[in-house]
Length: 274
Image (cartoon, rainbow, N blue to C red; front, top):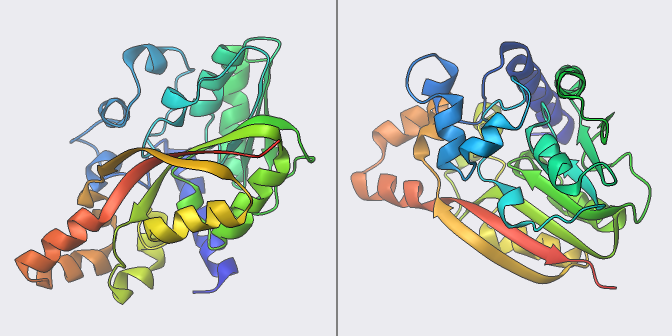
């Protein structure tokens, strides 16, 4: 798949998610009514009832795979940069932690998501949050602007992950931190899934192996790289992709189990040297 084709497909899928208020990156049941609700999904990946009540209605679309803020240790007055900010869920939670003298910048490439996020900011009177249109591979942010860069299940969608981490490194102040939740692989996926753009936007086909993902962070210049949490991610995320369903149906049980255990959600921290 070509880079522009992937970006166009991701943009279209997340535009639909913004308009419908549903998730493209979670089990199919959350997109089709019934089954797990967005709230239940969010709690299962690390958000609290207090988090869910602290943001405007419509800010949480259930698009994440973890809670990067749970271990971020944000401080009052800091500047936070959110890569792939969606409808603003993590931005609003961060804004409450950095308080009025801090700042949060959300970057998203989907105009529909930005419209939704800006509307949510107005509803919630979040005056210290700003949303910018842009790609995470080419951030609309000056050098050394942020104290911390966060991201939640977005970098795995990028076909140029090394460039994303270089941009995050550039945008951070010396001594700044990186804290991301994302999907990685313990082993390579079958080629049929890797070639499926539908699986790509379901947070699967674009995922790198854990070694390659951490290697991209290191190549960007980050130090003190740590995996803080690692959990097997539910394979129902494949359910939105007919190709993946067919593969899973025809795999021997042992192979299917290996595939299920190869998709993991991780929280990764790193630091830009001073």
